[in-house]
Amino acid sequence: MSYVGSAGRTDGCIFCDALRSPDDRKALVLRRLPLAFLILNRFPYAPGHLMVALTRHVGTLGEAGADELGQAMALVQGAVRALDRASRPEGYNVGVNQGRIAGAGVEGHLHIHVVPRWSGDTNFMPVLGDVRVLPESLDATYARLTSALAEDDHRG
Picture 1 (cartoon, rainbow, N blue to C red):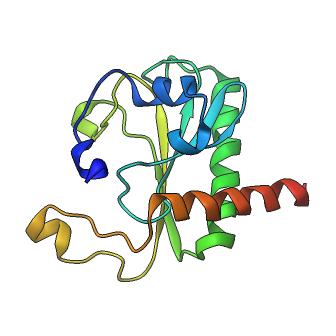
Picture 2 (picture 1 turned 135 degrees about the horizontal axis):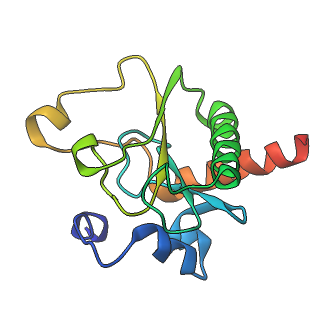
Picture 3 (picture 1 turned 30 degrees about the horizontal axis):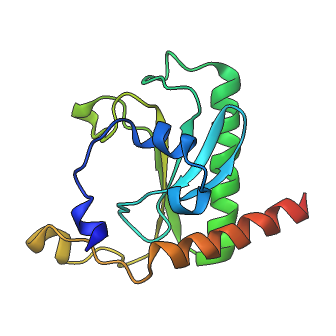
């Protein structure tokens, strides 16, 4: 119920709040680099839905520097490798929604979605009930991805 009750709260920027959090697990932050970070989506479209956000609070690709975008894409690559090991998806949606009309839920802080996909992973629940059904808790997903990211670190 705490998850459901928090859906729609917009007290500031979710990404800036996560960066300030002293507890990465509680904030769902999986990895931090100086210019970008990887975070598990608290309201995922699919299990393992991740986001890569810039550390700096900017809202558009035009405002982002090449170094920031480079670190963000390195995190996207690492996220895909970790998801491949942890969840074995059949494909991915990777993208930026810039502006509310384009679907940006957080307009002021640039971020990239990494959504693992499987054949048949959509069902009638979102259409009929405006509900998403996930087969795993966020804590379990966080633990699996943390382990997969650590394995990526050891591989070099």
